[in-house]
Length: 356
Image (cartoon, rainbow, N blue to C red; front, top):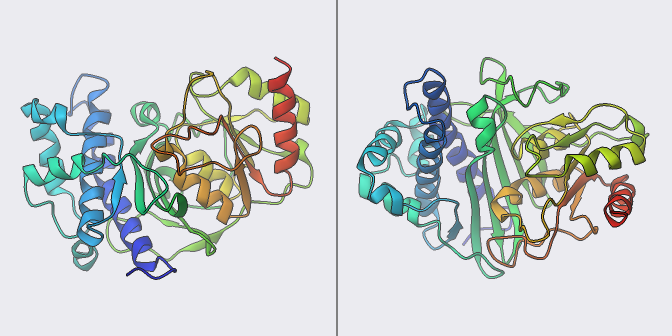
C-alpha cells in the first residue's frame, strides 16, 4: 500500500519519463538527419508509441492494478509491420545507463507483443475513482517536429485529484534562472545545458533537476517569481493559433498593460517555464465552443504550477476538474499565474471574452 508521501510513485514516474526521453531524443535526432522517414509525421508517431510503451511498462511493473489514460492504442501497429518493427527496435534498445534504476522500471520490455500490450493498457476511461495515471508521451508534436519545445508528461490522479506530476522537457535550459526569449519555441535543441525533469507532489512543493540518461540527478526547489507589477509580466502561449486564440490573448495583454511580446512555445513546457519563474502567465483560450481539453495535456503541469506557488483555473476562475473522464469536460480554457495576481488576470480574461 502506497504511503501518502507518494515517494515510490514519484521515483518510478521520474525514472520512467527520463527513460522515455532517451527514446524521444533519439527519434528527434534521427528524424533531423533524415534517417527515420521522409514522411513528416512519422517520427512523432514512432516517438509517441515508443515512449508510451516504455512508460506504461514501468507503471504496470510497479503498480499492476493502476489504470492509465494514454493517448495511443496499438491497433494501427498490429496491422503495420514496418512501423511496428521500427518502434520495437527503439523500445528494446532503450534503457537507463544506471542498471539499478533501469531494473526499478522492470528492465527491458521483454517482447514485441509485450510492447503492444503495454500501449493498449492506456485505454482507461478516467474518472473519479481509484488510481489513474494520465500520460502524454510527446506533448507538443509540432514543436517536436520543428525542433521547438515538447514534453514527456505523466501525472497520477487518485479519486480524481492530481497527486503527482512529472514533465520531461529535453529542449528547455537546465538553469532555472535562464530567461525566456522569443526563439525558445522554434530554435531549440537538447545540446549541453539543456534537458530538465520537473516534478511536483501534492503538498510537497515542486522541483527541477537535469534530465540524465542514468540515475536521477539532485533536485532543486522551484517557485514562481513574485510579480509586483502586472505590466512587467511575461506571457506564455501556444505556438499554434488553432490551440489558443492569439487575438484574445493580445487583447488581454493590452488590457493588463503588458507590453512585452508573448513567448510562444508548444507543450506543457509552458507550465514548467512559469513554475520555475522564467515566465509568469500562461493562457490557453478557447478557440471552439465544443472543444474539450484532454486531461493528459494539463494534469502534470497543473499540479507543478500550483505546488510552485501558482494558481491554475479555467477562464471562469474554476479549478480544472480531472475527475470526469479523459477530458476536462467541465472547463473551458486555462489561466495559470502566480496566486497573488491570478484573480486579476481571470477578471480581465472574462471581461475580454464576454465583450466578444
